[in-house]
Image 1 (spheres, rainbow, N blue to C red):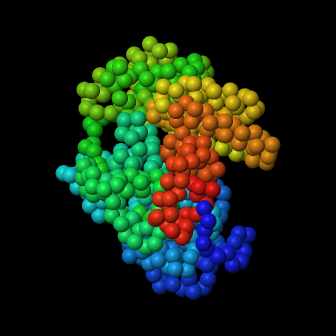
Image 2 (cartoon, helix red, strand yellow):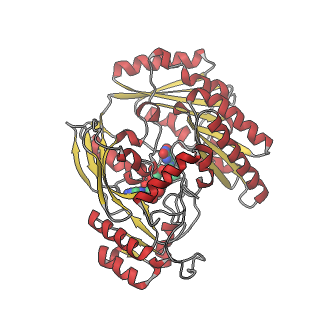
Image 3 (spheres, rainbow, N blue to C red):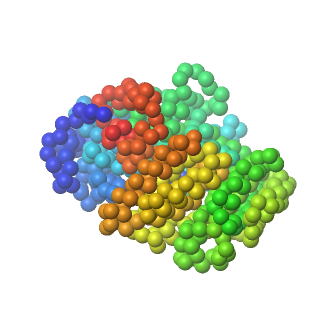
Length: 477
Ligand SMILES: Cc1cc2nc3c(=O)[nH]c(=O)nc-3n(C[C@H](O)[C@H](O)[C@H](O)COP(=O)(O)OP(=O)(O)OC[C@H]3O[C@@H](n4cnc5c(N)ncnc54)[C@H](O)[C@@H]3O)c2cc1C
Protein backbone atom coordinates (compact mmCIF):
# COMPACT_ATOMS: atom_id res chain seq x y z
CA UNK A 1 0.00 0.00 0.00
CA UNK A 2 1.31 3.44 -0.87
CA UNK A 3 1.67 5.95 1.94
CA UNK A 4 1.50 9.66 1.44
CA UNK A 5 3.68 11.00 4.19
CA UNK A 6 6.88 12.72 3.21
CA UNK A 7 10.10 11.31 4.54
CA UNK A 8 12.25 14.27 5.40
CA UNK A 9 15.35 12.86 7.05
CA UNK A 10 16.69 9.87 8.89
CA UNK A 11 16.12 9.91 12.61
CA UNK A 12 18.56 8.88 15.31
CA UNK A 13 16.89 5.44 15.14
CA UNK A 14 18.27 4.97 11.63
CA UNK A 15 14.84 5.09 9.97
CA UNK A 16 13.11 7.72 7.93
CA UNK A 17 11.51 10.29 10.19
CA UNK A 18 8.09 11.57 9.29
CA UNK A 19 6.31 14.86 9.74
CA UNK A 20 5.59 13.76 13.32
CA UNK A 21 9.12 14.91 14.21
CA UNK A 22 8.46 18.54 13.25
CA UNK A 23 8.58 20.85 16.29
CA UNK A 24 5.27 22.48 15.32
CA UNK A 25 3.61 19.03 15.36
CA UNK A 26 4.94 18.37 18.87
CA UNK A 27 3.55 21.72 19.97
CA UNK A 28 0.14 20.97 18.49
CA UNK A 29 0.07 17.52 20.13
CA UNK A 30 0.93 19.16 23.47
CA UNK A 31 -1.91 21.63 22.96
CA UNK A 32 -4.34 18.72 22.40
CA UNK A 33 -3.45 16.41 25.32
CA UNK A 34 -1.33 18.57 27.62
CA UNK A 35 2.47 18.75 27.55
CA UNK A 36 2.80 16.12 30.30
CA UNK A 37 1.02 13.59 28.06
CA UNK A 38 3.41 13.83 25.10
CA UNK A 39 6.72 11.96 25.11
CA UNK A 40 9.47 12.80 22.60
CA UNK A 41 12.67 12.07 24.52
CA UNK A 42 14.30 9.01 22.79
CA UNK A 43 14.74 7.21 26.13
CA UNK A 44 11.07 7.70 26.98
CA UNK A 45 9.62 6.71 23.57
CA UNK A 46 11.88 3.65 23.21
CA UNK A 47 9.67 1.25 25.28
CA UNK A 48 6.73 2.09 22.98
CA UNK A 49 8.64 0.80 19.96
CA UNK A 50 8.12 -2.88 20.70
CA UNK A 51 5.72 -5.54 21.92
CA UNK A 52 6.06 -9.25 22.77
CA UNK A 53 7.90 -9.78 19.44
CA UNK A 54 10.77 -7.91 21.12
CA UNK A 55 11.98 -6.05 18.03
CA UNK A 56 12.19 -2.29 18.50
CA UNK A 57 11.01 0.44 16.10
CA UNK A 58 10.72 3.47 18.40
CA UNK A 59 8.12 6.10 17.48
CA UNK A 60 8.93 9.80 17.13
CA UNK A 61 6.41 10.69 19.83
CA UNK A 62 3.94 8.99 22.15
CA UNK A 63 0.72 10.75 23.12
CA UNK A 64 -1.77 9.78 25.80
CA UNK A 65 -5.25 11.18 25.12
CA UNK A 66 -7.95 10.86 27.77
CA UNK A 67 -11.08 11.63 25.74
CA UNK A 68 -12.61 10.81 22.38
CA UNK A 69 -12.38 14.50 21.47
CA UNK A 70 -8.60 14.38 21.97
CA UNK A 71 -8.32 11.27 19.76
CA UNK A 72 -10.35 13.11 17.10
CA UNK A 73 -8.00 16.11 17.27
CA UNK A 74 -4.89 13.88 17.02
CA UNK A 75 -6.20 12.06 13.94
CA UNK A 76 -7.32 15.28 12.26
CA UNK A 77 -3.81 16.65 12.81
CA UNK A 78 -2.24 13.47 11.39
CA UNK A 79 -4.47 13.75 8.32
CA UNK A 80 -3.64 17.39 7.79
CA UNK A 81 0.14 17.20 8.28
CA UNK A 82 0.40 13.53 7.27
CA UNK A 83 2.22 11.21 9.64
CA UNK A 84 1.61 7.60 10.76
CA UNK A 85 -0.43 6.90 13.89
CA UNK A 86 -0.31 3.56 15.70
CA UNK A 87 -2.77 2.79 18.51
CA UNK A 88 -1.37 0.91 21.48
CA UNK A 89 -3.03 -1.06 24.24
CA UNK A 90 -1.03 -3.11 26.73
CA UNK A 91 1.75 -3.68 24.16
CA UNK A 92 1.79 -7.47 24.63
CA UNK A 93 0.83 -8.46 21.09
CA UNK A 94 2.65 -11.38 19.45
CA UNK A 95 2.74 -10.07 15.87
CA UNK A 96 4.04 -6.50 16.23
CA UNK A 97 0.59 -4.94 15.73
CA UNK A 98 1.30 -2.00 18.06
CA UNK A 99 4.84 -1.51 16.76
CA UNK A 100 5.24 1.71 14.74
CA UNK A 101 7.37 0.14 12.01
CA UNK A 102 7.07 3.22 9.78
CA UNK A 103 7.61 5.75 12.56
CA UNK A 104 5.19 8.54 13.40
CA UNK A 105 3.36 8.64 16.72
CA UNK A 106 1.99 6.03 19.07
CA UNK A 107 -1.37 6.77 20.67
CA UNK A 108 -1.26 5.14 24.10
CA UNK A 109 -4.72 4.37 25.50
CA UNK A 110 -3.52 4.01 29.10
CA UNK A 111 -5.48 7.04 30.36
CA UNK A 112 -8.72 5.88 28.70
CA UNK A 113 -9.31 3.18 31.28
CA UNK A 114 -12.69 3.97 32.81
CA UNK A 115 -15.64 1.62 33.22
CA UNK A 116 -18.68 3.69 32.28
CA UNK A 117 -21.48 1.25 33.11
CA UNK A 118 -21.99 -2.30 34.33
CA UNK A 119 -25.55 -3.45 33.71
CA UNK A 120 -26.09 -6.96 35.06
CA UNK A 121 -29.83 -6.86 34.27
CA UNK A 122 -29.18 -6.28 30.58
CA UNK A 123 -25.90 -8.24 30.59
CA UNK A 124 -23.55 -5.59 29.23
CA UNK A 125 -20.72 -3.31 30.32
CA UNK A 126 -19.52 -0.11 28.69
CA UNK A 127 -15.84 0.74 29.07
CA UNK A 128 -12.96 2.63 27.54
CA UNK A 129 -10.27 0.74 25.59
CA UNK A 130 -7.38 1.19 28.04
CA UNK A 131 -8.66 -0.99 30.87
CA UNK A 132 -6.91 -4.34 31.28
CA UNK A 133 -8.92 -7.47 30.57
CA UNK A 134 -8.25 -8.59 34.17
CA UNK A 135 -9.46 -5.33 35.76
CA UNK A 136 -12.67 -5.46 33.75
CA UNK A 137 -13.23 -9.11 34.68
CA UNK A 138 -12.70 -8.34 38.38
CA UNK A 139 -15.16 -5.45 38.35
CA UNK A 140 -17.97 -7.18 36.47
CA UNK A 141 -17.69 -10.31 38.65
CA UNK A 142 -18.66 -8.18 41.66
CA UNK A 143 -22.05 -7.88 39.93
CA UNK A 144 -22.49 -11.66 39.49
CA UNK A 145 -21.62 -11.63 35.78
CA UNK A 146 -18.49 -12.41 33.80
CA UNK A 147 -16.64 -11.43 30.62
CA UNK A 148 -15.54 -14.75 29.04
CA UNK A 149 -12.58 -13.83 26.75
CA UNK A 150 -9.44 -14.81 28.68
CA UNK A 151 -6.17 -14.40 26.76
CA UNK A 152 -3.28 -15.68 28.87
CA UNK A 153 -1.95 -12.10 28.76
CA UNK A 154 -5.13 -10.83 30.49
CA UNK A 155 -3.32 -9.05 33.31
CA UNK A 156 -1.41 -6.87 30.80
CA UNK A 157 -3.55 -6.75 27.66
CA UNK A 158 -6.18 -4.02 27.24
CA UNK A 159 -9.76 -4.40 26.04
CA UNK A 160 -8.95 -2.20 23.00
CA UNK A 161 -6.06 -4.52 22.09
CA UNK A 162 -8.22 -7.61 22.64
CA UNK A 163 -10.90 -6.26 20.30
CA UNK A 164 -8.39 -5.09 17.68
CA UNK A 165 -6.78 -8.57 17.69
CA UNK A 166 -10.03 -10.48 18.27
CA UNK A 167 -8.20 -12.27 21.07
CA UNK A 168 -9.00 -15.82 22.16
CA UNK A 169 -7.95 -17.77 25.22
CA UNK A 170 -8.38 -20.98 27.17
CA UNK A 171 -12.17 -20.69 27.36
CA UNK A 172 -12.66 -20.31 23.60
CA UNK A 173 -13.86 -23.90 22.90
CA UNK A 174 -17.05 -23.12 24.83
CA UNK A 175 -17.29 -19.34 24.85
CA UNK A 176 -15.60 -18.20 21.61
CA UNK A 177 -13.23 -15.31 21.07
CA UNK A 178 -13.59 -11.59 21.84
CA UNK A 179 -15.74 -10.78 18.79
CA UNK A 180 -18.67 -12.70 20.29
CA UNK A 181 -18.73 -10.31 23.24
CA UNK A 182 -18.55 -6.97 21.44
CA UNK A 183 -22.04 -5.52 21.08
CA UNK A 184 -21.12 -2.00 20.03
CA UNK A 185 -18.20 0.36 19.58
CA UNK A 186 -17.34 4.02 19.39
CA UNK A 187 -14.49 4.43 16.92
CA UNK A 188 -12.55 7.43 15.64
CA UNK A 189 -11.72 6.79 12.00
CA UNK A 190 -8.41 7.80 10.48
CA UNK A 191 -9.94 11.03 9.19
CA UNK A 192 -11.16 12.00 12.66
CA UNK A 193 -14.84 11.06 12.24
CA UNK A 194 -16.56 9.48 15.27
CA UNK A 195 -18.65 6.47 14.27
CA UNK A 196 -20.89 4.32 16.48
CA UNK A 197 -21.37 0.68 15.54
CA UNK A 198 -23.83 -1.86 16.96
CA UNK A 199 -25.54 -1.04 20.26
CA UNK A 200 -26.40 -2.48 23.66
CA UNK A 201 -28.42 -5.46 22.52
CA UNK A 202 -27.43 -8.91 21.29
CA UNK A 203 -30.01 -8.58 18.54
CA UNK A 204 -29.18 -5.73 16.18
CA UNK A 205 -29.33 -6.26 12.43
CA UNK A 206 -29.49 -2.68 11.21
CA UNK A 207 -26.95 -2.06 8.46
CA UNK A 208 -23.62 -3.72 7.80
CA UNK A 209 -21.87 -5.35 10.77
CA UNK A 210 -19.19 -2.73 11.32
CA UNK A 211 -18.71 -3.97 14.90
CA UNK A 212 -17.61 -7.33 13.51
CA UNK A 213 -15.38 -5.56 10.98
CA UNK A 214 -13.59 -3.65 13.73
CA UNK A 215 -12.90 -6.88 15.66
CA UNK A 216 -9.53 -8.04 14.39
CA UNK A 217 -8.89 -4.83 12.41
CA UNK A 218 -5.53 -4.40 14.19
CA UNK A 219 -5.76 -0.64 14.60
CA UNK A 220 -5.79 -0.13 10.81
CA UNK A 221 -9.33 1.24 10.39
CA UNK A 222 -9.84 3.44 13.43
CA UNK A 223 -9.08 3.92 17.09
CA UNK A 224 -11.63 2.32 19.42
CA UNK A 225 -12.55 4.82 22.14
CA UNK A 226 -15.44 2.99 23.83
CA UNK A 227 -16.76 -0.57 23.82
CA UNK A 228 -20.09 -2.08 24.86
CA UNK A 229 -19.37 -5.66 25.87
CA UNK A 230 -21.67 -8.60 26.40
CA UNK A 231 -21.57 -10.34 29.79
CA UNK A 232 -22.83 -13.73 30.97
CA UNK A 233 -24.13 -14.88 34.36
CA UNK A 234 -21.29 -16.24 36.53
CA UNK A 235 -21.20 -20.02 36.56
CA UNK A 236 -21.39 -21.85 39.89
CA UNK A 237 -18.19 -23.87 39.68
CA UNK A 238 -15.43 -25.34 37.51
CA UNK A 239 -13.40 -28.54 37.44
CA UNK A 240 -10.25 -29.64 35.59
CA UNK A 241 -9.10 -33.13 34.66
CA UNK A 242 -5.53 -33.83 33.54
CA UNK A 243 -4.31 -36.99 31.81
CA UNK A 244 -1.01 -38.16 30.35
CA UNK A 245 -0.78 -40.01 27.02
CA UNK A 246 1.86 -42.11 25.27
CA UNK A 247 1.64 -40.03 22.08
CA UNK A 248 0.48 -36.61 20.97
CA UNK A 249 -1.75 -38.28 18.41
CA UNK A 250 -3.55 -40.28 21.13
CA UNK A 251 -4.09 -37.14 23.24
CA UNK A 252 -5.42 -35.13 20.29
CA UNK A 253 -7.76 -37.90 19.15
CA UNK A 254 -9.71 -37.50 22.41
CA UNK A 255 -10.72 -33.93 21.52
CA UNK A 256 -13.82 -35.04 19.61
CA UNK A 257 -14.94 -37.73 22.09
CA UNK A 258 -16.88 -35.41 24.43
CA UNK A 259 -19.44 -34.05 21.96
CA UNK A 260 -21.39 -37.33 21.51
CA UNK A 261 -21.77 -37.38 25.32
CA UNK A 262 -23.31 -33.88 25.33
CA UNK A 263 -20.26 -32.40 27.05
CA UNK A 264 -18.85 -29.06 25.86
CA UNK A 265 -15.59 -28.49 27.77
CA UNK A 266 -14.78 -24.86 28.41
CA UNK A 267 -11.05 -25.58 27.81
CA UNK A 268 -8.99 -28.38 26.27
CA UNK A 269 -5.25 -27.78 26.22
CA UNK A 270 -2.59 -30.13 24.88
CA UNK A 271 1.13 -30.23 25.73
CA UNK A 272 3.72 -32.27 23.78
CA UNK A 273 6.73 -34.24 25.04
CA UNK A 274 9.28 -31.47 24.38
CA UNK A 275 7.23 -29.03 26.44
CA UNK A 276 6.89 -31.66 29.19
CA UNK A 277 10.66 -32.23 29.20
CA UNK A 278 11.34 -28.48 29.41
CA UNK A 279 8.77 -27.93 32.16
CA UNK A 280 10.10 -30.85 34.23
CA UNK A 281 13.67 -29.58 33.99
CA UNK A 282 12.62 -26.08 35.06
CA UNK A 283 9.94 -26.78 37.64
CA UNK A 284 10.04 -30.52 38.57
CA UNK A 285 6.26 -30.92 38.78
CA UNK A 286 6.71 -34.71 38.98
CA UNK A 287 5.06 -35.48 35.64
CA UNK A 288 5.26 -39.11 34.52
CA UNK A 289 8.45 -39.96 32.56
CA UNK A 290 6.18 -42.04 30.27
CA UNK A 291 4.08 -39.01 29.31
CA UNK A 292 4.59 -38.10 25.65
CA UNK A 293 1.62 -35.71 25.83
CA UNK A 294 -0.70 -34.16 28.41
CA UNK A 295 -4.31 -33.13 27.94
CA UNK A 296 -6.09 -30.74 30.30
CA UNK A 297 -9.88 -30.65 30.11
CA UNK A 298 -11.94 -28.11 32.08
CA UNK A 299 -15.70 -27.78 32.48
CA UNK A 300 -17.90 -25.19 34.17
CA UNK A 301 -21.57 -24.94 35.13
CA UNK A 302 -23.76 -25.90 38.08
CA UNK A 303 -22.22 -28.12 40.78
CA UNK A 304 -24.34 -31.11 39.76
CA UNK A 305 -23.56 -30.80 36.07
CA UNK A 306 -19.83 -30.23 36.63
CA UNK A 307 -19.61 -33.27 38.90
CA UNK A 308 -21.44 -35.47 36.38
CA UNK A 309 -19.34 -34.24 33.44
CA UNK A 310 -16.03 -34.50 35.32
CA UNK A 311 -16.65 -38.15 36.19
CA UNK A 312 -17.45 -38.95 32.57
CA UNK A 313 -14.42 -36.98 31.32
CA UNK A 314 -12.15 -39.05 33.59
CA UNK A 315 -13.66 -42.21 32.12
CA UNK A 316 -13.35 -41.01 28.51
CA UNK A 317 -9.70 -40.06 29.03
CA UNK A 318 -8.89 -43.48 30.56
CA UNK A 319 -10.85 -45.38 27.88
CA UNK A 320 -8.80 -43.59 25.19
CA UNK A 321 -5.28 -44.26 26.41
CA UNK A 322 -5.01 -41.63 29.15
CA UNK A 323 -3.10 -42.51 32.32
CA UNK A 324 -2.22 -40.71 35.55
CA UNK A 325 -5.70 -39.19 35.34
CA UNK A 326 -6.11 -36.48 37.99
CA UNK A 327 -9.14 -34.37 38.82
CA UNK A 328 -9.18 -31.10 40.73
CA UNK A 329 -12.25 -29.20 41.80
CA UNK A 330 -12.44 -25.43 41.65
CA UNK A 331 -9.78 -23.46 43.54
CA UNK A 332 -6.13 -23.94 44.46
CA UNK A 333 -5.99 -27.61 43.37
CA UNK A 334 -7.26 -26.73 39.95
CA UNK A 335 -4.73 -23.93 39.73
CA UNK A 336 -1.93 -26.44 40.41
CA UNK A 337 -2.96 -28.50 37.38
CA UNK A 338 -2.92 -25.35 35.24
CA UNK A 339 0.53 -24.34 36.56
CA UNK A 340 1.95 -26.97 34.20
CA UNK A 341 0.38 -25.22 31.20
CA UNK A 342 1.50 -21.78 32.38
CA UNK A 343 5.09 -23.02 32.77
CA UNK A 344 5.55 -23.90 29.09
CA UNK A 345 6.45 -20.60 27.42
CA UNK A 346 9.34 -19.60 29.71
CA UNK A 347 10.63 -23.20 29.85
CA UNK A 348 10.97 -23.60 26.09
CA UNK A 349 13.90 -21.19 26.02
CA UNK A 350 15.99 -24.06 27.34
CA UNK A 351 16.13 -25.34 23.76
CA UNK A 352 17.51 -22.16 22.18
CA UNK A 353 17.76 -18.39 22.25
CA UNK A 354 15.11 -17.60 19.62
CA UNK A 355 11.54 -18.91 19.72
CA UNK A 356 9.48 -18.45 16.56
CA UNK A 357 5.97 -18.85 17.94
CA UNK A 358 3.11 -19.41 15.46
CA UNK A 359 -0.56 -19.91 16.31
CA UNK A 360 -2.05 -21.84 13.42
CA UNK A 361 -5.59 -23.21 13.63
CA UNK A 362 -7.42 -26.12 12.00
CA UNK A 363 -10.78 -27.82 12.58
CA UNK A 364 -10.16 -29.70 15.81
CA UNK A 365 -10.59 -33.17 14.26
CA UNK A 366 -7.53 -32.34 12.14
CA UNK A 367 -5.29 -31.51 15.12
CA UNK A 368 -3.74 -35.04 15.30
CA UNK A 369 -2.73 -34.83 11.63
CA UNK A 370 -1.54 -31.23 12.01
CA UNK A 371 0.85 -31.96 14.87
CA UNK A 372 2.17 -35.18 13.30
CA UNK A 373 2.92 -33.42 10.01
CA UNK A 374 4.49 -30.40 11.71
CA UNK A 375 6.92 -32.80 13.40
CA UNK A 376 7.72 -34.27 9.97
CA UNK A 377 8.35 -30.77 8.57
CA UNK A 378 10.70 -29.96 11.46
CA UNK A 379 12.58 -33.25 10.98
CA UNK A 380 12.95 -32.58 7.25
CA UNK A 381 14.54 -29.19 7.97
CA UNK A 382 16.53 -30.38 10.98
CA UNK A 383 14.75 -27.86 13.20
CA UNK A 384 13.53 -28.20 16.78
CA UNK A 385 9.75 -27.84 17.26
CA UNK A 386 7.55 -27.97 20.36
CA UNK A 387 3.75 -27.87 20.14
CA UNK A 388 1.16 -26.98 22.74
CA UNK A 389 -2.00 -24.95 23.00
CA UNK A 390 -5.70 -24.53 22.70
CA UNK A 391 -6.34 -27.89 21.01
CA UNK A 392 -10.05 -27.74 21.89
CA UNK A 393 -10.58 -25.05 19.28
CA UNK A 394 -7.88 -26.39 16.94
CA UNK A 395 -5.46 -23.55 17.75
CA UNK A 396 -1.95 -24.93 18.24
CA UNK A 397 1.05 -22.86 19.33
CA UNK A 398 3.88 -24.12 17.18
CA UNK A 399 7.31 -23.12 18.52
CA UNK A 400 10.37 -23.45 16.31
CA UNK A 401 13.27 -22.87 18.67
CA UNK A 402 16.72 -22.00 17.36
CA UNK A 403 19.89 -20.04 18.08
CA UNK A 404 19.42 -16.32 17.41
CA UNK A 405 23.03 -16.05 16.16
CA UNK A 406 22.74 -18.93 13.68
CA UNK A 407 21.31 -17.40 10.49
CA UNK A 408 21.32 -20.72 8.68
CA UNK A 409 19.28 -22.37 11.44
CA UNK A 410 16.86 -19.41 11.46
CA UNK A 411 16.43 -19.72 7.67
CA UNK A 412 15.53 -23.41 8.13
CA UNK A 413 13.01 -22.49 10.83
CA UNK A 414 11.45 -19.89 8.51
CA UNK A 415 11.07 -22.60 5.87
CA UNK A 416 9.27 -24.71 8.49
CA UNK A 417 6.95 -21.75 9.23
CA UNK A 418 5.98 -21.46 5.55
CA UNK A 419 5.27 -25.18 5.23
CA UNK A 420 3.29 -25.15 8.49
CA UNK A 421 1.15 -22.27 7.20
CA UNK A 422 0.49 -24.11 3.94
CA UNK A 423 -0.34 -27.30 5.84
CA UNK A 424 -2.80 -25.47 8.12
CA UNK A 425 -4.60 -23.98 5.14
CA UNK A 426 -4.62 -27.37 3.34
CA UNK A 427 -6.26 -28.93 6.42
CA UNK A 428 -9.08 -26.38 6.30
CA UNK A 429 -7.63 -23.92 8.79
CA UNK A 430 -5.62 -20.73 8.66
CA UNK A 431 -2.33 -19.07 9.66
CA UNK A 432 -3.46 -17.35 12.88
CA UNK A 433 -6.14 -18.29 15.38
CA UNK A 434 -5.73 -15.40 17.81
CA UNK A 435 -2.45 -13.48 17.52
CA UNK A 436 -3.31 -11.64 14.31
CA UNK A 437 -1.06 -10.61 11.42
CA UNK A 438 0.73 -7.36 12.34
CA UNK A 439 3.98 -6.91 10.43
CA UNK A 440 5.35 -10.31 11.42
CA UNK A 441 2.89 -12.41 9.39
CA UNK A 442 2.07 -9.82 6.73
CA UNK A 443 4.23 -11.56 4.08
CA UNK A 444 2.07 -14.67 4.48
CA UNK A 445 -1.41 -13.14 4.09
CA UNK A 446 -1.85 -14.69 0.65
CA UNK A 447 -1.47 -18.19 2.12
CA UNK A 448 -4.84 -17.65 3.80
CA UNK A 449 -6.71 -15.00 1.82
CA UNK A 450 -7.29 -15.15 -1.92
CA UNK A 451 -6.62 -12.17 -4.19
CA UNK A 452 -10.21 -10.92 -4.71
CA UNK A 453 -10.88 -11.08 -0.95
CA UNK A 454 -7.61 -9.30 -0.22
CA UNK A 455 -8.57 -6.56 -2.69
CA UNK A 456 -11.88 -6.02 -0.86
CA UNK A 457 -9.99 -5.73 2.44
CA UNK A 458 -7.63 -3.17 0.90
CA UNK A 459 -10.65 -1.27 -0.45
CA UNK A 460 -12.18 -1.15 3.05
CA UNK A 461 -8.90 0.17 4.42
CA UNK A 462 -8.97 2.89 1.74
CA UNK A 463 -12.51 3.94 2.75
CA UNK A 464 -11.63 4.25 6.44
CA UNK A 465 -8.12 5.61 5.95
CA UNK A 466 -7.69 7.28 2.53
CA UNK A 467 -4.26 8.70 3.35
CA UNK A 468 -2.88 5.45 4.83
CA UNK A 469 -1.90 6.98 8.16
CA UNK A 470 -3.26 4.33 10.55
CA UNK A 471 -0.78 1.62 11.46
CA UNK A 472 1.06 1.45 8.11
CA UNK A 473 3.28 -1.54 7.32
CA UNK A 474 0.80 -4.05 8.72
CA UNK A 475 -1.25 -6.86 7.22
CA UNK A 476 -0.83 -5.86 3.54
CA UNK A 477 2.73 -5.62 2.24
C1 LIG B 1 2.47 -14.23 27.52
C2 LIG B 1 1.46 -13.93 26.45
C3 LIG B 1 0.33 -14.70 26.35
C4 LIG B 1 -0.63 -14.43 25.37
N1 LIG B 1 -1.75 -15.20 25.33
C5 LIG B 1 -2.70 -14.93 24.42
C6 LIG B 1 -3.89 -15.72 24.38
O1 LIG B 1 -4.10 -16.64 25.16
N2 LIG B 1 -4.81 -15.40 23.44
C7 LIG B 1 -4.62 -14.37 22.57
O2 LIG B 1 -5.51 -14.11 21.75
N3 LIG B 1 -3.49 -13.64 22.57
C8 LIG B 1 -2.54 -13.87 23.48
N4 LIG B 1 -1.40 -13.13 23.51
C9 LIG B 1 -1.23 -12.06 22.51
C10 LIG B 1 -1.75 -10.67 22.96
O3 LIG B 1 -1.65 -10.50 24.35
C11 LIG B 1 -3.16 -10.37 22.48
O4 LIG B 1 -3.12 -10.20 21.07
C12 LIG B 1 -3.80 -9.12 23.11
O5 LIG B 1 -5.10 -8.99 22.61
C13 LIG B 1 -3.02 -7.85 22.82
O6 LIG B 1 -3.56 -6.82 23.61
P1 LIG B 1 -2.75 -5.49 23.88
O7 LIG B 1 -3.64 -4.59 24.67
O8 LIG B 1 -1.42 -5.78 24.42
O9 LIG B 1 -2.63 -4.90 22.41
P2 LIG B 1 -1.37 -4.24 21.71
O10 LIG B 1 -0.28 -5.25 21.55
O11 LIG B 1 -1.03 -2.97 22.38
O12 LIG B 1 -2.00 -3.92 20.30
C14 LIG B 1 -2.45 -4.97 19.47
C15 LIG B 1 -3.14 -4.38 18.24
O13 LIG B 1 -4.32 -3.69 18.65
C16 LIG B 1 -4.30 -2.35 18.16
N5 LIG B 1 -4.99 -1.53 19.17
C17 LIG B 1 -4.70 -1.45 20.49
N6 LIG B 1 -5.59 -0.62 21.09
C18 LIG B 1 -6.44 -0.18 20.12
C19 LIG B 1 -7.56 0.69 20.10
N7 LIG B 1 -8.01 1.30 21.19
N8 LIG B 1 -8.19 0.89 18.92
C20 LIG B 1 -7.77 0.29 17.79
N9 LIG B 1 -6.72 -0.53 17.75
C21 LIG B 1 -6.06 -0.77 18.90
C22 LIG B 1 -2.84 -2.02 17.97
O14 LIG B 1 -2.65 -1.00 17.02
C23 LIG B 1 -2.29 -3.36 17.49
O15 LIG B 1 -2.52 -3.51 16.12
C24 LIG B 1 -0.43 -13.36 24.47
C25 LIG B 1 0.71 -12.58 24.57
C26 LIG B 1 1.66 -12.86 25.54
C27 LIG B 1 2.88 -12.00 25.62
